[in-house]
Length: 181
Ligand SMILES: CC(C)(COP(=O)(O)OP(=O)(O)OC[C@H]1O[C@@H](n2cnc3c(N)ncnc32)[C@H](O)[C@@H]1OP(=O)(O)O)[C@@H](O)C(=O)NCCC(=O)NCCS
Image (tube, rainbow, N blue to C red; front, top):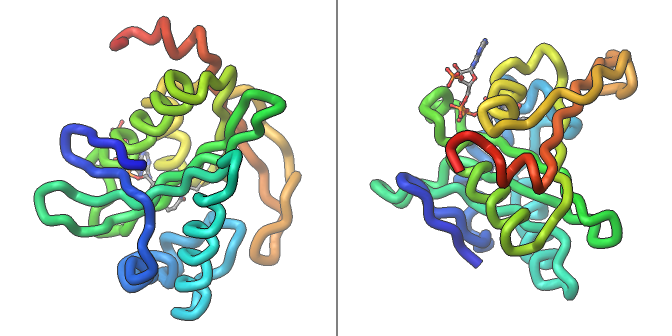
């Protein structure tokens, strides 16, 4: 599967992509609010292999796609969604190479995956969460039109400390009625 946006191509991973995903998966600042630790080369490769294997499952529930710049063909990050078919909902996530932050790429990529989720998979709800200190992450959620539904206090233990979480979500009818649709 692949999705095209104005500036980006979202495509399935290939094993050799780990060289580029590792550029950000091994970066302390990029991984600061991730539940996983910075990855070794081996772990970056294993992650890509697991994405490829899960993408082949039937029915498919994992859509973890490479974000590629159309202009240079550079792989700059990934955007993903795990679908719960019984609940008709999916959780969304994203991560980008720091060199490309604050150019609107993640919002552009995530909007395309949400469109796919609502319009091709007929999901009822797409949600995402992040640490409240991760302003860039919840700004993306807000730019996608998601609503903040919860602020959980110290509900997750990450990297030696109890952390809060914001939960954001968007429903199918809210997606259809968004201002720029
Ligand atoms: C979260 C992340 C994917 C955002 O990617 P991005 O491509 O830079 O996102 P966008 O450019 O689409 O939007 C970022 C928004 O956050 C804003 N922002 C970034 N840092 C900010 C800060 N410290 N304070 C306030 N706003 C901030 C930007 O100005 C922009 O908003 P705007 O368009 O209203 O100006 C990227 O920062 C990243 O990879 N972080 C590390 C991984 C991560 O935390 N992933 C999410 C886990 S929940």
